[in-house]
Amino acid sequence: MRELSLHILDIAENSISAGATQIEITVIEDLLQDELWITVQDNGRGMDAEMVKRVIDPFVTSRTTRKVGLGIPLLKDAAEACNGFFTIDSEIGKGTTIRTKFQHSHIDRMPLGDLAETFLTLLIGTPEVHWIFTYKVNDQAFLVDDQEIKEVLNGISLTDSRVIEYLNHLFREGIAETKESAVKQGALYANH
Amino acid sequence: MPTIKSIEDLKRIREEAQKIREMRDQTDKVQIVVGMGTVGIAAGARETLKAILGFIEKNHLADVILRQTGNMGLEGQDPVVQVFLPNQEKVTYGKVTPAVALKIMEEHIVKGNVVLENKIEA
Image (cartoon, rainbow over all chains, first blue to last red):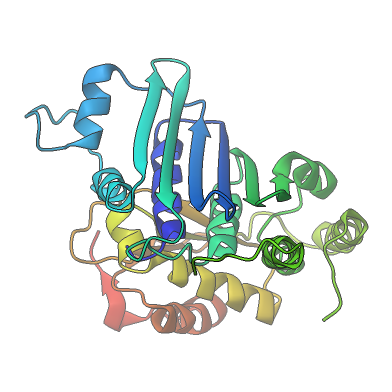
């Protein structure tokens, strides 16, 4: 996978598989500290320590009770190769939080890619989950809590063609404007 | 480009959609499912889903439900798409690039003809 936004999609997919009803995804580009943070927090069924180990390094143990893809070890390696880190905090019955950090300007850091499309895919493709998306660049933030959208729609499908158009604009413009206004505020990225 | 992202816009969309919905039979839903496991995503499933959404938006299709699901267990066939038409057996497609997805939308969803080149047994 060559975009961080595809990794985000992959991790969120794990959260959905874990039965989460609420998933919060936060992406922060801190250009002042030269950091890129991604957090995915869910209220799914969670994992014990043994399983967390297995998810991070699927070749460590021979137990294969649950199929977990290679997405997580790949993302961990990518973060660590960019002066960053990757952690999983999980508790059975409570949920899982994945946090990863990259050095923003690192030459090997994957591009963030099409974050709007990842958010749109998750919201439309799994409407029964309560999604909270945050994209932040320095102190500029764009937040979508889908509860308000779903309340207004009142049962109208997210795959109604006009709703798709609306959501497309919402995510694409929201993300682009957030980045633009952060850059306008003079927080130019010296290392890039 | 006029912005259409205020909550008022969304309310207007709902009013219009509700009017149309009342005139239609709710059992005639078409369901499309895209496999979004790790392999599917790496193979381009997000772009496949994007193409399907784009087709629905552009052609103002109504009553299409698009969903994503985890790994479908069809090794070597990603991206995988399944189509459920009312009162018909499901059809599973393999190696669904965005171009194939558009063909499935045009031929299968709109006209009702299965796209045999990409149909797989599942």
